[in-house]
Image (tube, rainbow, N blue to C red; front, side, top):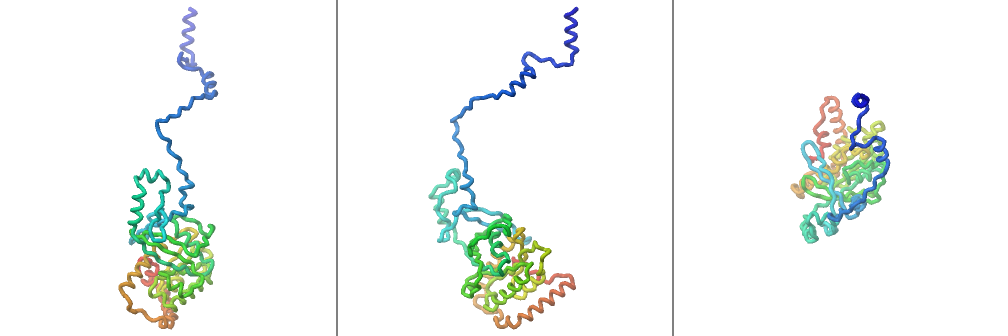
Length: 344
């Protein structure tokens, strides 16, 4: 009778029954507290993968690497295809024959030193163009060139500026590679300006004095007869400072159209339109070179003296067009083409 009562209690109890193979909770907690030390077995069946030295692969600090900007032009505008890196060119305008970044990279790719040397020798030549950066001090010329070097926003207003007066930027535009040498000119001597293939006249839209300086530079270039055969782009920088704007976009367009230049508004601080300006500069150089080749030595443009005399007339004409545009609410074709860097 007592044996049956114990069996009934065991069946009616709400506590879970532990099987013989299960561990009680008290022992389970104690076993978890004890650190289990397993002997580490090091297998020699596989080769250890070497750790890549990231400091060695930092392309920004590697003096032997160049950044290659890639763009494509379409009806919708400029498309940034990204940046790539390669070995820096030698003075003979070819890739420098050096070893790969990491020895395993070349081995995995199956490239030998002979293959690399053949690739270096077969690299086609690249057209090199010189671009003069002109404008008042503090307009952001150096910061703009620094932003040209990368697709990332570098916040050039706060970043350190480069002390080099000339910086080279390699660009692939529509599958054709070129190299632009940007030079920040302070002297504006004729012998130096005549070597340029294009001019970027930069002013700050929050500084009227820099805008006046830009107009004087355009007049100076026109007096030296450097406008007819070279593209000129008037660049309004710092448009992100909208509350402090002192020069309107219409005033910039009016001045640009007066001198037959292109016009664009950019902001280095937020990386706005910087890629469009970089690719547009190369496009303007190529289009102008082709136009000069077709025209040859034919002088179909008016003389500098004629331009100097009609400069005030041209300015008045642009002001009249600007007024009509404001009254009719329709943008004039001349002002519209002024901002299109894909056409002459």
